[in-house]
Length: 253
Length: 222
Image (cartoon, rainbow over all chains, first blue to last red; front, side):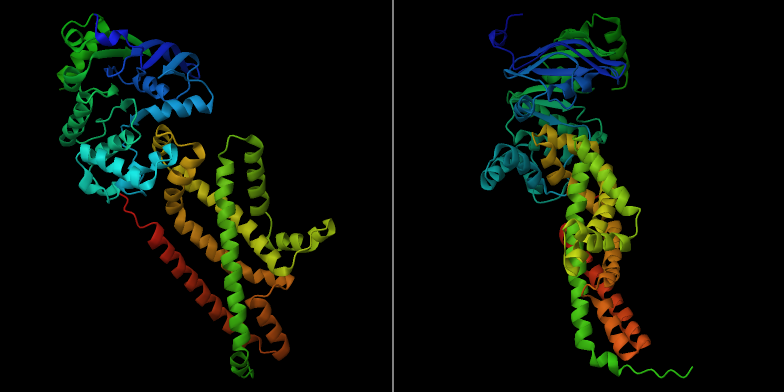
């Protein structure tokens, strides 16, 4: 495959990354390169290390071996490299994690003001822009507990976008939602993908993977087992573990 | 029983008693403020990555919570001057109340902080905030809200404990009552009066705590 994008230097790369939790080998020799604008879907059985993998990218988890580079910054133990990476990489969590004591607007202005030093008026302007984009601006003055799960997750996406990140990590963003709310969040993510955001999504939403992913990566037992464009991945999975996983997950959807 | 009640002495001395009650409220409020500051900083220090700091906080809490308040205030007032630190009774009272209340506040607030979900901290870190910012901006308020009832009942205790400051002759309600009593021998009337006054002071404090709660902790939670 020769895309124009291939010639660009990667936005993000993981090289020979290993991670242990005590004696448990959580990530085994992970090699992954993500170019600007690429959309990656990570899937695999629970405990396969997919969440751990994306949490290593913004240093919520520490790695024991290997190299992670984000936008030319090598992630090490120094606070400086961690700050630099977190500034450029947004994250959306399974459980939304909105701050309950702040309004929706305040949730969105907090990091730009405190991390980037943006003035209040400017931060609110940015917040309104992204709240509008996730179609939830009318709720700006409410508190998180007053919103539905789907609305909260859309706010969480807007909150991350307010830092104007170069890439977004999604850690099972629809797993905690009631079924009728999954679509509104996925639609938001699809819109984001269309606008060219670089995205790494841990999700079991195979419809989403088909629709937006450039590559689907299948993990099991801490390893990347298979990696392919969605058409190939779903039609001709080469590894028996991928076949078994797809058989199981597609039977449920 | 041929003791004849005569409350006229109480009414006569009412201005003195009211001034002393104000002093008690003042002691309680400054002591609480100090206790709250010690509580918050203590919890932050206890969760810091600097080990000696954590150990120091644990030791402080252990010592203060397992020794009598009366001994603590005597120590500050009578023992510290031997080492060249001489404080007047009011300052001594405030420091003693603040340290004592602070040790309890650390334990109470820590319970609230421990109950904050890990995801809240991670969301803050992922947005690029530093650990101290996460504690101050994200963790602290919901943690205080969660333990607010325990903390305020501890602070009512602190308010009533101001009466122990009589022991170093600090100016407050009980010490003034004692003086009036020893001048007039009207024990029943005087102590009955200040009992009512302490009750009113406690209720006022509860009212104040309710107002603070309404102002700061009114955001909806599930």
